[in-house]
Image (cartoon, rainbow, N blue to C red):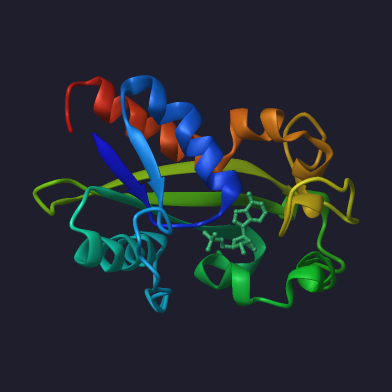
Length: 192
Ligand code: IMP
């Protein structure tokens, strides 16, 4: 079955292919499906935003689609930046701004998680949602050079930031990988 990923991000495409192609899916990027749009992500939850993206692509290509939306939720900031993660600051200032906002906050009060919701629209246009999370803390300084976004300040339970892990290591534990695993389980249980 052909499945369109509502994204042109090469890393996401590789990760999705790695997990879903062994199950017999042919994964197409948005571009490969001939869809050129960038819908406004104005939902108030990750699920709403993932559905906005998936629905916009589905309406054009009329093929099964998956779209994801993700972000960082910091307990001390009542879940912020959340759905505003990408817009919290310019990409190269995200970590510095977060460290500054948590200035003076003790190690015990720096818990955070990344969340990812995947919206899958099946061939009958029905929406299904799959969520994944990864828990950690916000460090006091940036560490590591891999990854993107908040990776240099997100400390996993092994003491490493996500930016100190290589992509294989991160893909074993990430919020996106966990959401994808939930989707894979859904297909493995005979659903489609
Ligand atoms: P989107 O789901 O691709 O729209 O990502 C939303 C924003 O959340 C990104 O721009 C990043 O700022 C942040 N984010 C999502 N996933 C990650 C991650 O794995 N590492 C670091 N930042 C992330």
